[in-house]
Amino acid sequence: MATTTIAAAVPLRRPRRATLLRVLLRRPSFVVAASFLLLLVVVAVFAPVIAPYDPNKQVLADRLQGPSAQHWLGTDDLGRDVLSRLIHAADLALLAPLISVGVAILIGVPTGLWAGLRRGWVDAVFSRIADALLSLPGLAFALAIVAVLGPGLVNAMVAMGIVFAPNLFRVVRGAALAVAEESYIESARAIGCSTARIVWVHVLPNIAAPFLVQTTILMGVALLAEASLSFLGLGVQPPDSSWGSMLEVAYQNQYRAPFAVLPAGTALVLTVLAFNTIGDCIRDAVARRRSA
Amino acid sequence: MNILSVRDLTIDLIGKPGQPGLVENVSFDVPAGRSVALIGESGCGKTLTSMAILRLLPPEMRISRGEIIFDGLDLVTASPRELRAVRGGPVGMVFQEPMSSLDPTMTVGDQIGEARRLHLGESRAQARAKARELLDRVGIANAARRLDSYPFELSGGMQQRVMIAAAIACDPKLVIADEPTTALDVTIQAEILELLRSLQQEMGLAVLLVTHDLGVVADFCDEVVVMYAGHVVERAAAQPVFANSMHPYTRALLDSIPQAGRARMPLKAIAGRVPPAGEFPTGCRFQPRCAHAVPGLCDEPQAELEPEPGHRCRCVRVGTRELSLQEAP
Image (cartoon, rainbow over all chains, first blue to last red; front, side, top):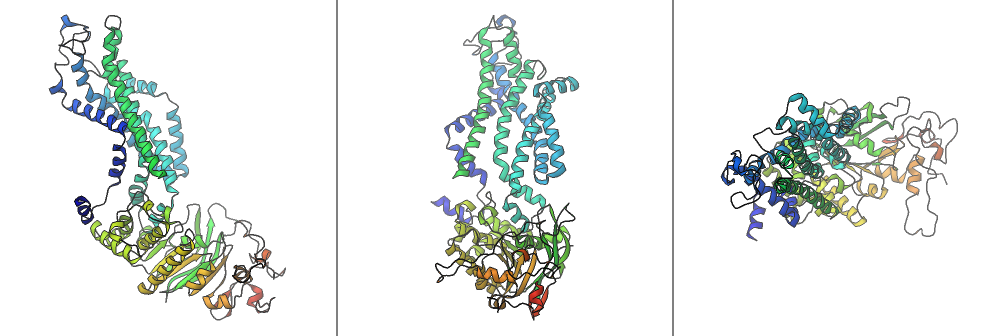
């Protein structure tokens, strides 16, 4: 009771994000997925403290061991501790999707807004470019970019970002197209809002839901793409590890150490699942709010 | 003193040069502090005309001719900056569908305050305090708590009150209300009109009311502008238009109002429908549906005539006193 009276007295607006978050927090699947990602962030930040060994320390005598008390998740082909390498690669598992989705947002959102709100030739030109980009197989395009710019995580992720941009473009354009027809945009213009203010204050919040759904799902796809590229040796370069490159090592030694594919594989599956679950929860929460 | 003067306003579809205007040569005045009704059937151009005043036409249309003088400024030639200063400042606008005209992601308080922050540079807190006052003014109970409501939490009537509060936020001189009561049920309609009327009287507002409801007009308005198929066919003070309508279209419109006490009588209707843009007849645009049309006379271009002082009519037969609807059966 006391909190509500304080809230009424303080002239602060109740932010919309908070109400959406409140709806989301009522969903167990969202809470589990978000906690997992939060845990991943903590692990990534405190990796040097948490990891039991130096991830690059080689003990050739202990190669390709299974799980044991000293090495909980075993060791790899150079006798490095798998758990430590997994923990140290967590930051990449978060950074890689952030880079590629960030690039996709930077390209896709402004162009999508412009095309959806302006329509006409702007829309025609950008939509054709997006269609052309969508027809490219994503990984093959990323491979081509890496071939030009050289292997490396950032290059690979920027390439994936370019591949993702048309997805976001389409979502944002479609939503903006629908919102532009709403009469509240007209009434915003009728009270004297500039175009910039209309886009920022009235259009963006109203397309946030489909945009958030799309970005979280793209995060999962981006992580898988990073793992694929690293698996092929085109992403992270040794001695750094990513879950993808760890899988590759494990794959080569699969007959001698069948357990080794499980740690990195499980980490990948769970993280992608977490991203997708969050996307699904946002979609459901928004759909329910709209029908209510 | 006219706060708004529309002169020879003509609105075209871009890219169809041969086609007669959707709205052609529309002229009327809104005197300061008075209420003027713009009436006509659906599709007659009344909403287009009202949107054109604030230059809010859809991108495929343009004003090809005419002037719109608001408080000394011609809005047709005004710069985007001048237009933005007028919109929501000295001219407020209320739309037809309150639900879809309010941004669903913004609280009511922020939406009412937005115009004040834009035009008067108020802080969010100042605008919020004013929004609370305005909510009180438009008759919303518990204004302080309603500030944080989202539009979907309000009923249709309350939403329209919020729209009106937003329209009058900057103490405008003119409010353009485009069918403000159409989406509401009848009892709420009366309350909203009562609210508009009291605001008009207390704030000295001029109101341009766009409507097809003649009952509303009779109650509310000082002057009437009747539109048909993009033309103004008759304009005068409200009293003479109702008591002594000159144009056959106005007459037919009045005759088609259902009346209590005339049960089991056939309802008079105007045969046919408003021609779509691009198929307007030459001359008087009402003549294909008019009972008094005379070939060779009515298919010539019609000028606006003034058979009685202050009572203008675009009908050559009435204008030259050849035809008087008072004697018509």
